[in-house]
Length: 133
Image 1 (cartoon, rainbow, N blue to C red):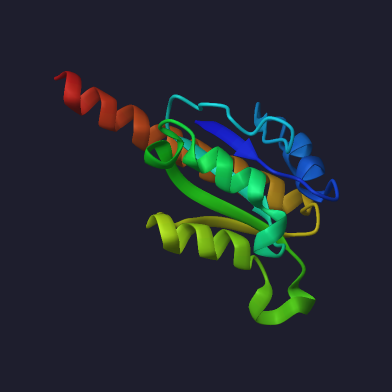
Image 2: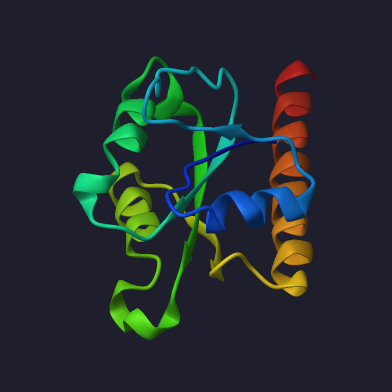
């Protein structure tokens, strides 16, 4: 399962690095990158005007169609705003929020996110096999 992520302060990047998973980092200078296959998007919680690169990335080629879920990072002290960016994207594109973590995630968060990714990979693999048979 492919992963794309966006990081503003570095917390999301640190989380992804701790997972050891290969991931594409969306950047402000050139957000136009086609994932070309199903993927999970990992985003921090920030104001919409700080997420322009993510919006551009999602609008590029087949990225919206290939999005299977969104994971969000945030700070629980912000109550209802905790992972609001992930929730907004998921709601708008009708995909699930598949995981959430605080700051750069705990060791347990890392393990659990890896499991989520593995589950999506397994589902995708079964889906492909069912279309082949």
